[in-house]
Length: 278
Image (cartoon, rainbow, N blue to C red; front, side, top):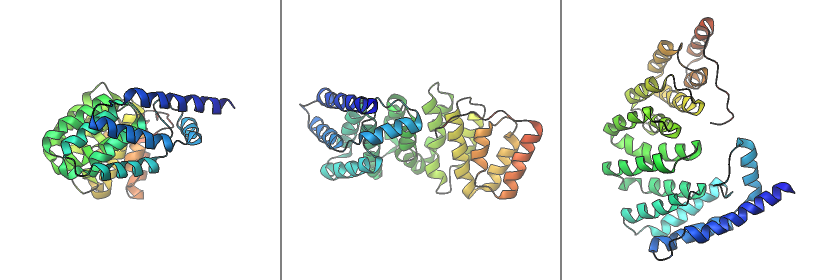
């Protein structure tokens, strides 16, 4: 009964949010209200509760709409605004992001990715600002970075140098983004040099979600360039946290995996950071 009361409180709070975040006087405000109304109509409070328990997360900004439904709303929204110039799409995305609602953020990132062929180099600063300003969880970090941002970097590899600067940020999501934003390109067989530079700079990062992020990046790199990733792991295994190491070697041939693990264990290895999240 207590869970139901909490869920109902969240439901009421979201309704109040809809009334206060929508700038009624603008065309984008009208479209924003349409999106929020659709989300409101698809609330699943039991799902919200399950997410909270499974990930042990603060769900204050999470309405409780299942991700497949959110993607469908994004697709229908794009259909409604398809004739609009890309600049108008970015304005709507900004309004969605300003709500602070998780589902709105995912829709914003989804809209840009669906219109990715409109992205140009100068849009990098827009997406970078979104990463710094609006991302506050690994899920929206990965959604933005492995899709729209990743696409833009893959299409314009010189931008990878700019993303490497993120490794020195005090923001954990920006540091994670410096690695996972390269995954889009890695899955298509390039950006390996940038990935190894990112891993080198993040090697001793103490944040477990950053460790998992660059470990995941190395795992993706190993699918196309296993020998170079193996060489990097063997060179860095004394300093690489076990969390990152295990992610990085997951797709390597069995013999290489065992060699990397055995040699790190012989010398002792930094304790694996414990976390239940990606």
